[in-house]
Length: 218
Image (cartoon, rainbow, N blue to C red; front, top):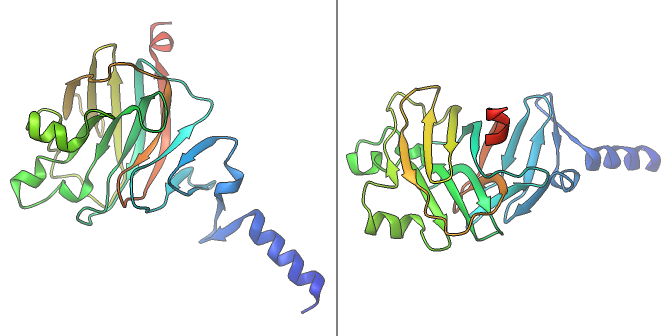
């Protein structure tokens, strides 16, 4: 093969990757849209899916042009049924990379035979002072709850989070009953919002919709 053809092929691979018929946008092409912390990010243009890879420690893809304080956050998310390997959700009220609130899910606990594990399916945290361990030890059963066992831990599920000045309610798959309702523990609240993955976990997100309180009232 001529050198010019090899150069052309390499250039095309750098610009984009065709995987299973879907065009994948790589991390270097998404820098204008996201500030990515401790993860690599990809975007599938065909399905509209954001993917974060699996890395030790928590990771966030902050959305640069989005600001959020109160209102409704909706999205579809997919993890997997592997014990301690799937923590997927959203971070909001971010002041910086270590100060934020998050709602996230442990899909591997959705259908767990152990009722204690099932009780740890959906989680609220407010970092840096209130991580999952502190909240579980100090307030068992208050900041994490089970979800419907009908949910497939390997499939997409829909999430709606209603955030007011004090309270946060979490709904799944268009149910009118919240799976979690908590009072915010954040002392000072920022406006950053982004996709969140926990320690050692990746995940997939799509169909993000952010309705700010002013938008809802107008």
